[in-house]
Length: 219
Image 1 (tube, rainbow, N blue to C red):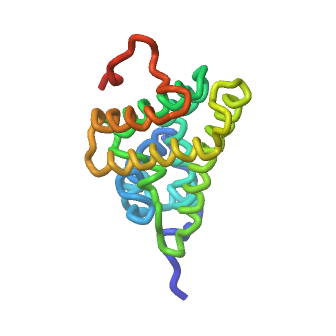
Image 2: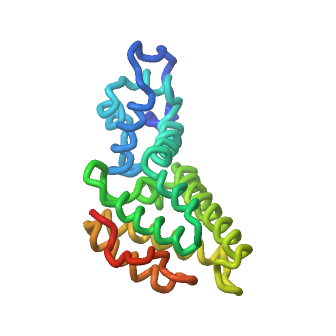
């Protein structure tokens, strides 16, 4: 019987003597981000992380489990701006902070362009369908959090009557996902910010721009 050697875990050999799990995950983030889940081999990971295959399987269990931990690490390290955006005082300010900080995050010079949750795997072979489902669920979780924030804005009278909080959240998240695709294709920060400004003009309740602020966010 043929087995997928990429997913099969060999006998445990113990954790490496000197091992920093957070650092190892950061290195794996870079690989999965640039190459996607299916484009990344175990050899790619062990080379980047400075581990042998038995140690990787012992510590992380499997390639898929490592990927799930990588996505959690990515959310913690690179997507904190989403939590900050939700704390803004108005729905328009939430959207503005989210879209402009997203433009920055997608174009950092010390990270791959784009977004790990998009480039990690929008499609896959049937064998890896669970990875696509995991990423979709992760993105949907963020959309639901944004919809809840917009529902609060409706209760506070901050959004016009008749606004659909769920549809509005879907609009904002779909826009950020499209921006990620453009960033991966080479769009720079200024271009993404200009596009975000257009999207904010149609946001109900204003653009969220502070009084006197007539410039785009700094590069």
